[in-house]
Length: 119
Image (tube, rainbow, N blue to C red; front, side):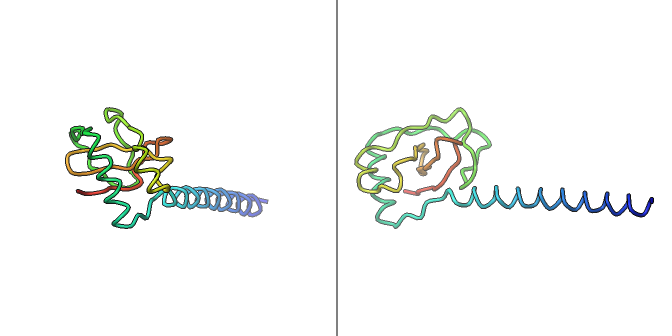
């Protein structure tokens, strides 16, 4: 009887561990999916369009921009200019934040960085 209970408990633990791993794998796949693959021409077009807007923000202390990272609440998201989204439709659903020498393309739903364009 104790042996059957132990086997049942072991099976339950393995089942729950497998479900947790599957959920984690699903989250990883979802996170890596939200990334842009822009050509250098597209990057240049977007950067020039945003640069003409003249909106730059200071980099918050301790924040290092990286793809997949969420932006601090202190940074203000702005919609990409119409000329950028008409020339590069792939960025239509994204916003941006312009720092000193970096343009962060951001998913406004979760505030995560999907691409970083350098000047």
